[in-house]
Image (tube, rainbow, N blue to C red):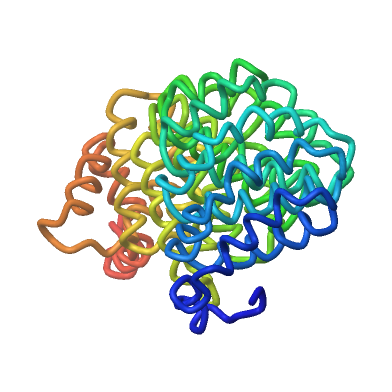
Length: 403
């Protein structure tokens, strides 16, 4: 029964009408081994889809699984927690059924149990409950899991760390209030350390959590920035080889930098703009990475007035990105004499003259605004072909002969 494949198992409840009830009754047996086998079977059935999980709920198994996580045997606790996770994951209604049976308080009590395999399942179950709605996430938070669970981000077991970070992510994503609660508990600083200490898929939930927090508001994004979150996200973007992890880091950086010029400057100073551009232009990048890198670039560029960070993009960016870069220069240069001078000496003005823009386009308009900041002869001097025209004039110039 447990090993039925998904395509075969949708008829379990009809075909084995009494099997689920029989398994549920086994959860009341005195022998822990029998309970364990029954919980394992019910979890295997529930994990396939919502319909099968509902059948497990209808058999009356959920309150009995909650009793099993309170039993002394560790292996029984693990398997019962895993089954509750498999039931909760499919829908808010199924998760609510698990919550209504009093599971959260008992799961929360197990978050600091020394057994790593048990903690893996406990964090998984709490994550599957929290992910569905604000109300369910709030109920998990009300079980006073913070700040205690933050220590598990430094657990020696990779899966405990990852599942703990996933739980924090699932709570943080819902509302600014829940994200702020995590910030106040020291959760952002702890997750930033976690991102710095981990790699690959273990790192991913931490990256996403920082993105969700930064997305909610200016203040929450600044909390990520001042805790050096942008630095760790920039390192992840640079170091990670998998496109989906780079895409998550790009998205998170875009969320941190999109709010105000101050936010954009903090992100740009971490030197992420060239890396984002590289991810966008790289031939082998997945479509998702290209989309997220482009969106992050646009989000940051539209707020960034820190010109030294923008200048490298003048030379490398394709026209659809270049438009946003030149737009920012056109906003700053008219009001900043020092920046105008620096723009000439750094080669920026020369580069702008080399851009081929369609007449009447937004890009052309931005270039005209920039050129309007300088005397006409300076603009001419840096225009392509100017030195050749000067040489031509020398060739055509007739010397004035004196007697």
